[in-house]
Image (cartoon, rainbow, N blue to C red; front, side):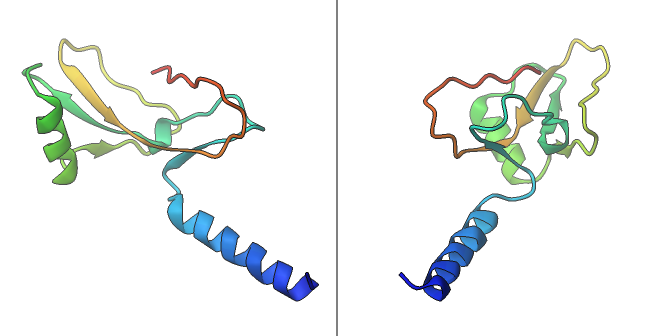
Length: 102
């Protein structure tokens, strides 16, 4: 394969990967074992504690979740329930389990 064709294919793959993974997407990869995901999370405070998964999905679709802009998420002490949303893309070649500690 000539070098120009290789570079063109490599560039195309890079552009497609960047287009698929927004800046707010958590990328799981082999070279990193932990992530600070606070600035990729959005959340909804459910004071009733009765919101269903369908209700939360509807609120998310209607942009009712609050985007966390800080590195860490800081929520006040409350008796309310919180719903969290974040995007994850797994590009790791290692078959392992990933955990989210919130």
